[in-house]
Length: 197
Image 1 (cartoon, rainbow, N blue to C red):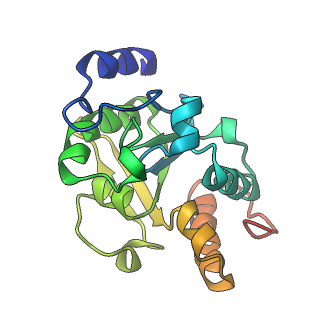
Image 2: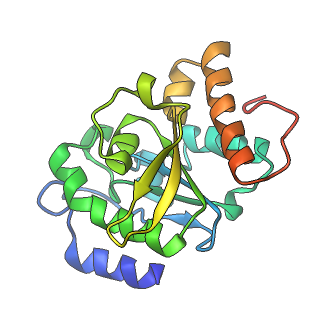
């Protein structure tokens, strides 16, 4: 089903009016039956070259975070709001987001995760249809309601790229606290070490 959705995305090319220069479509990666889904905003340079989400420095940090939760990258599903890299890694515009969001919503429907972690403000605002700040969103459970009626709890947290820029003990503790809430929600054993250690 994900393959059919990707094929439809490639035919429809919702990015075409906005983004024309890119190497690869970065559709998603991981288990199509994942209990946990991570959603970022858009591919970066390394993602554009490889065709896989979160493979650069931020992706390496995300993988450490996933491992610290007691999971492997192949256990989860990772996607972005935009499926192609915006020029100069720009933050997705409202128009770009609106064009690509329906495909992301269908991805969520198909994977049917038990929880979603949104990474950063653009992804959090897209999934939760809100204009709230990251400070107000992170660390608190919300709910995503797909057009199909499917509902899934959402935990917004900081994007790994933000953590790399502001790699403070305080920020790491906040993200780890968010991830522990997800571990608890999924009924998994609580890990003993902190993300990024």
